[in-house]
Image (cartoon, rainbow, N blue to C red):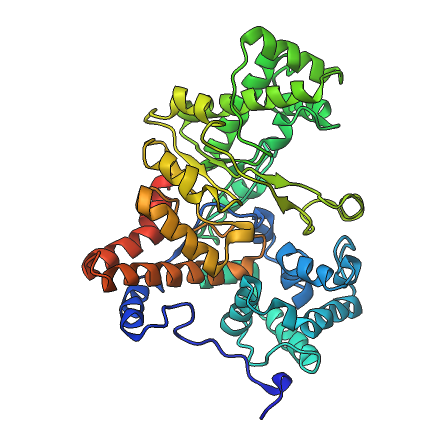
Length: 474
């Protein structure tokens, strides 16, 4: 029997499809309807500058390991220090990059059963043509093979963008960003893709942050508005949202610990805003102000048409020493319980039936799939249920989500798949995973005689094309 280190890396053509033969045959046909469709990626974190510069990736570690907290967190849990993976180290030397890659391969077993392994295997095989399973014995050969591929013109960012058939790619951007990279891409005749910015204003709503006052004053300077008053803050936000729309933006992105939207009267909003600027606001005061500001974001959305996405319930920087040393997005953000029904009621009372509002709700708490999100989307015409993300963008969780939500809200009240990734090369693997899972779910409905196959074929295409186009105004 061959050892694990000698075995080839293969992708089964029926991976993730149902195991029952009669259902699998239906799923194959449904998957064939969508397998080669272009990718719509309306929520992600690949930077526009990457495509504008179009520089070759220096090595496999810099591309696939160091920037991806999905990859590094399990290695850290297995005893590998983040600095040995290049996190927070700046550009890696060739020796440091190879050393970090070896650590990934030596710990390949810790990814068994995880979506991270699925994405990495798909990337290695489909993107780089690798046939070796990662291990201590194959690490150097894999590193050399991928590094050599990355030196070829066909593996530069723009070439990969085209090869992956990405039709639309959304980035995530600060409201004060000048969006120069987006403008340059738009005006570059050699780049034919569509890259759109996403308005991410969290730091300007969280008035309890130590740097909040400095940030909102900077925002005002960029917008040409005096943000020394709450009314000025509103005007600056409206100005910057218009700037994003002018540069192709289609949505706003909000992530706070909760989605409370209780309103304040004008005098209380101004009082709390002034206290926050002066650094004397209480924690309860800054929370109340943030909730009111989030309601204000929904009001703006009804006027400018930007889709509003909410993904709350994350404890950022759970491990203080790691946050202090390595900064944000380094693998130690953790989920919190979700609550939407009462928290969003003030917003939905005002705008839930407004024809211009599109509100997409994401969660890291599976208990709210059928208890809160699906019932909300099953009544309010403005509400859609966001696809599973982050800790839940895994095959079994996606299956549970699809079943729990569809029973109450159907298929049409969902967002389409969201890859939510900084890793360019994982985008096709993630979207392919979602297409296979949706084909399998719909095949089960056909096999149960709950749906005709022609309807299932129409639905699986709509989940890939129709839902993101409608929900994000593409």
